[in-house]
Image (cartoon, rainbow, N blue to C red; front, top):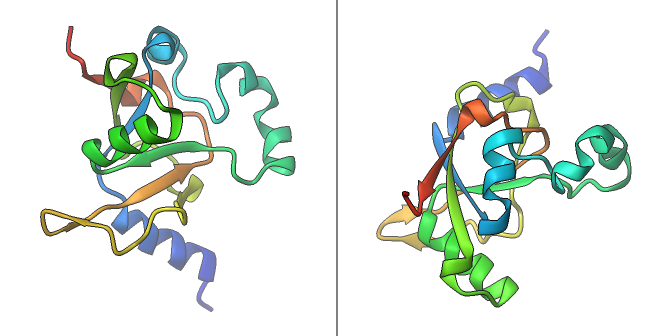
Length: 137
């Protein structure tokens, strides 16, 4: 008998790029490099399981296109690029069962012939899977 969940997880695993990007405010950079990326912020780390029950949208937003990520947060938050940092996330060691496609991003968004992919990761991303990609000190 075919396990549908396993099959869907395997299909999604094959579609998740090995490297994704997360854009956030510069003031959080040190905390992220120390504690990792936590859905909703580090203060929610201990309550993450409870938050999943009440808020299905809680997650770490990741994208395979740095420019789109930067433009989105600058537009949404009305901030200057100098207030932001970009982290590169290595996905190989992450639990692929915790990835979801970000339904807010139009799947037809194409940049330079590339279909932009955006994901929501529903777990904690360890500092071991994160490096500061921009700005480089």
